[in-house]
Image (cartoon, rainbow, N blue to C red; front, side):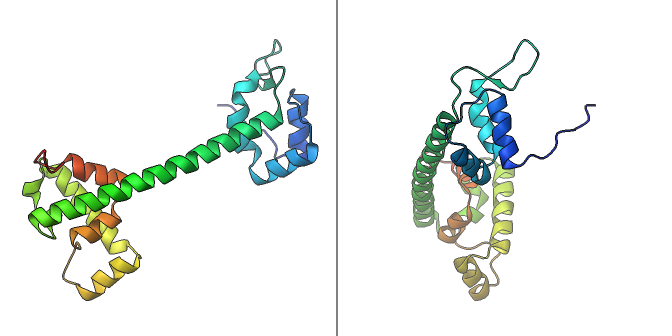
Length: 184
């Protein structure tokens, strides 16, 4: 087992280390600021493609042309892309919730999700239902608290409320398990 022996480094020491390893840093103050707010460890993932192994075995040396500004640009691109994807995924997720709640509750009633006969795999339905019951019981969302207070006899709320408690993964499992293909 390898013993861990890396010391913590100040931001200035991190900048010095990058320079020693061959990273071009045109603006030291900017590098310090970015390493302070983003962190060396997080940025490391973005400069990995610029690392090479030297003949002496140093596997953290940088290739010629490795530039801190380029690493930051890649990081920013990744951050902005992630935000765009999260926005798009959220829109799809909300639409799926809305469609599932509307379609099933209009077709089978407000507690369609409580009836196993609408789902093809009983164990999967039971697991999904149990997860939903737990999520409903622990939710601090205003709508969940309202339903628990007003309808204490319900272990699970109506489908339009339940869908708001589902993660995208849960929603996917509920949709996938629907017995009738047209419901899917």
